[in-house]
Length: 262
Image (cartoon, rainbow, N blue to C red; front, side, top):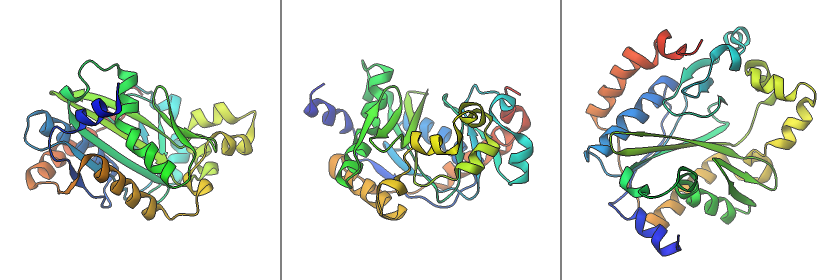
């Protein structure tokens, strides 16, 4: 796909930015569903939302088993909340100042004729360029990773609902690897014979690759998106907040949802 054709796909409407504010994990996940459906119905323009996190959490992929992924006793001891998202992929351990997370909500027509693999790289190309601008040797590695010569930086997941695409990505700014190994079983299994040093070599949090504060990196990302695709300031509407609160109450905070696969 030519660069001009790629840019043309982004120019459906004026993109809207929803800035980050501290938000409960369940609410972040409910907002993803609400805003995806709003874009699919044509009730809001394509949107970039930056996430704020109010507390530590583990975010499970839609089809992951709690017992396979999480050490629940350690998670409870460290007050790490357990939540489940609507997209697939792997579990993530999140600390509010350690992660940079965003969602893109776009009409499904934007990726018409594009393979899933191509759509992942398509939606995060602007981030890779922004990181390169900051001196990070970053690239996209199929299917869904942002990586670098310093190690893996982040990963993406997608879901498609009601005529729209949800693409969300989390990058590591800094990582509390000892705590991650306590609360995630997959981390324990993969690293038990290699130790924390190997974990640190496999991942490359941005704090290890640049001296820039987290807020500066996020600001540059937003500026990069705006320069490439256009971006105007927006906000959640009262109706969108209300719809998300109902989803939190009725689904995302329920045991049936969180323990969909026990």
